[in-house]
Figure 1 (cartoon, rainbow, N blue to C red):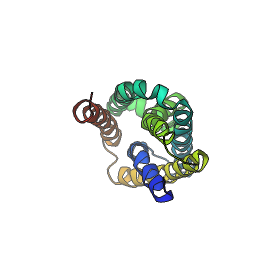
Figure 2 (spheres, rainbow, N blue to C red):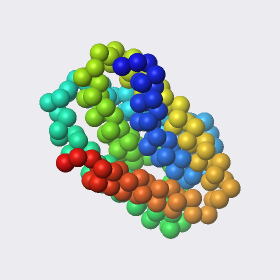
Figure 3 (cartoon, rainbow, N blue to C red):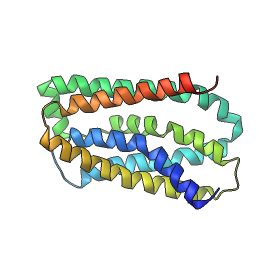
Figure 4 (tube, helix red, strand yellow):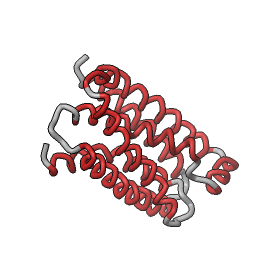
Length: 190
């Protein structure tokens, strides 16, 4: 597998993290750099960790991941997105989120949900001659950078359209979960 192929895979894997980073930026009322770093660190770390785990799990674990990944992502994104929509309608919750927009458990669930596909990619990596540490470094770094950009894009958009930004972000997560589920149920062979 070539360097360019690994980079393209890394960019593809980071698109879910980018979309979620935009939603985090939408609900962010404070443009401090730390709030860009947090999603980058969570998503970058898990996008690097999951392919490594998948690589070592190899083909033995492939069947279970392919049959469950879409359901896990759908449930996690649906729950988190639903909570964001609910919080968007609740002024009290909105103020609470401003104080701590990146709660540990919420970020952990988002990082896991966005990196499940990376676990399956890691299994695929085990079938090729590849330096797994180079691959995970590229994947983690790419996701980190793209997530930083996503939060900034979301924040800029959110400043212009503050009303309902968290509702839109939550709806985007729910739609992303539904998209993942439909792609796997309709387009993937059973």
